[in-house]
Amino acid sequence: GQSLEQPSEVTAVEGAIVQINCTYQTSGFYGLSWYQQHDGGAPTFLSYNALDGLEETGRFSSFLSRSDSYGYLLLQELQMKDSASYFCAVRPGANNLFFGTGTRLTVIP
Amino acid sequence: DTEVTQTPKHLVMGMTNKKSLKCEQHMGHRAMYWYKQKAKKPPELMFVYSYEKLSINESVPSRFSPECPNSSLLNLHLHALQPEDSALYLCASSLNPGSELSGKTDTQYFGPGTRLTVL
Image (cartoon, rainbow over all chains, first blue to last red):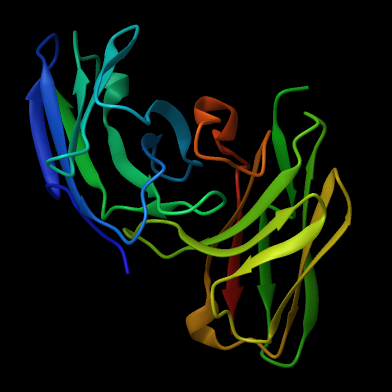
């Protein structure tokens, strides 16, 4: 089976940097994705790591260490609109995606 | 066209009703997915269609019946649902059905979802 652990809630100040960690246990591993979901909205793709290292996309970066079964999402220059739930998701096989429990990020002024 | 559309946005049905959820994408994606999401929980994968063939069924009860009429459309037929089936049903699509090295081409794009309430 699969399990992914994330902190349930994180609060950070506008303009700051926040890191959301994800540790996983999975029967197979093709890669780790990150999705953002605002209340009442659909998940939207943020970043994907198949190999170890850092991927940078604008204000968002994602890191993966396959040997440690660990990844994180880094959000820089936080804005109020970044308040949302963030899910890490693992691809244990070619076609399926298994989501973590989600981290509720609240950005405060 | 870079979006996945779903209809209806909201659906209320009784336990004896038969209804269908629809999903459409025109991005040329060859994999389509159904997820179920309960409040404050992550999406849970239900079905995967790869090149219009059902490739994954995550032990979903038979009262949920998926159908993929063509590469752009995905339906979810509902019959004799229970109140605990009330949830947000999300459709997603991705370009490739998946391989270890395909990476970002397997990014899943989600539709806005159908909010289902079973009375």
